[in-house]
Amino acid sequence: MTPRLNPKERVRIKRQRPREGLPASRVRGFEEVSHGYGEFLASSEARRCLECRDPACTRGCPVGVDIRGFIGKIVDGDMAGAIARIRACNFLPAITGRVCPQESQCEAACVMGRKFAPVAIGLLERFVADYETEHRLFGGAPPLARHGQKVAIVGSCATPRFNISATSA
Image: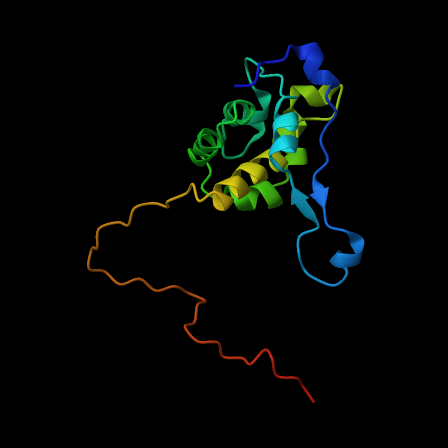
């Protein structure tokens, strides 16, 4: 368990920049530009959190994720606990960690952001979701009992109708 820092020590830590792919490789493929945080960067960024008594960041989150709680779990090195905190309210952290507009929601409400760069909440959420996938921590929801009714999925097809590899003349 990492010792907690006092607020003066926390504000001295600069916001961590995520790893990014090199421009030469980015122009040749469709991989993500940002590779997110590794464990060290995530831990460093999580330690910036002021652990507010009344976390405004959670009020800024549309789904009500316990942001202070999951960031505290990252600081403690408990990634399984961090993902459990997120999944209590958000079942798609790998997606929301990438596409949710945190800068205008939870990060906009972050108290650290009043004088310094806010805590990178979205990048931390993405890190935890990627960690969960990489370490196979998620077992999925148990299947529901069969109820005898049929379900149709609109917009889905079992076989592709178009040959994408064909070139047009």
